[in-house]
View 1 (tube, rainbow, N blue to C red):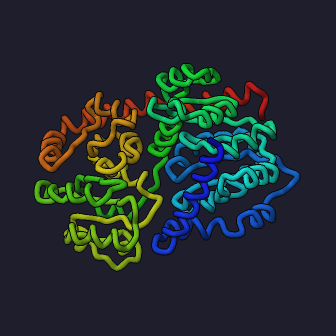
View 2: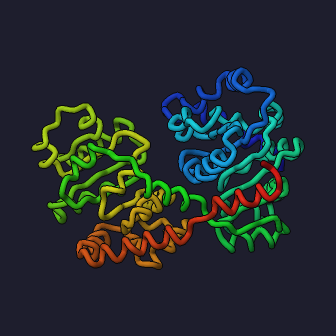
View 3: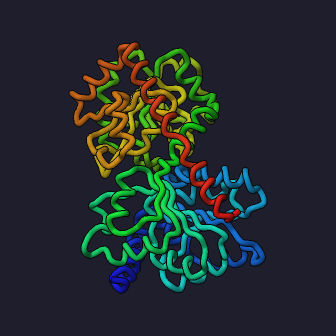
Length: 415
């Protein structure tokens, strides 16, 4: 099985190299790893023992961020290294101020893993949610570095619980302790003999709660929304935007803010084609847009990254994209501001979305007709306020996972 795992890693790397000929994200993935170990060796202080946080991408970074920031606040002298697997995490957070160093994660080979762990000599390693890399886990175990999974979530269809999942189960045995989101995950792990598990919840709730209480002030968004109600569509794809197009005539007095999941030029142009009466956020930033133009424009297209979580502050209703693809994106950022959230049909794998629907704070739609029905409901202010209050109450009731994790590691004398 290890042979197949290693072959899969090499095949994945080869495919990324092929895609990099035409795909910008794949190009970043490849270029970011060229000369990587030389860069790491020059950057690290061999006399320090780092706290190592690894994230797959930007979403996992936001999920683990409360833990990192609280740990740094409690122990400000602790040096921190962050690694990312994906360019969408690294390129956005490579200058993150609380980290001493931010690197791409070298490919998971036995040689790479042993070398990186030797260079870092980490005091602790924290991996978030789904990140399981056999050679890195084994190298950390050999180095006697405590390894923790935070905000872990497990489902019976995962390889860990299949007849062919021997190597995956071996990976689980290399983890010092699991902090999982729900009782189901704990039960599944117990069935295969994994008992070092605590149900602590999801650290994303701590992150979105903090963000909602400390949002960025975005003057350009304030100017655009002015005294209008606003519909915020976050992390959208084309299928989502085609659905939202039907609301423009239905809600003529509302402002619409669309923040696509990808902000390359072709995506922005496709949105502009759907919404002719639109303006780019970057154009407002550049200045020279008159108040009259802003007042007459119904749709604002966010063509930059990193501000969506604060934009929800300016909305009354949120639509979260991804539900017509592999699954919806982050519903909690909007819910933390007390916004009712709408999303597509592919949400069953996301516990928070399921629970928001149960609390009538979230609404799943599969077509334009269903979207219009939900909008008819939420255009009634009383219904909208009730749903938003339910969303906010849900988020606030789920906070605390960060402190549960830190209390545990502090009780073990790791810091």
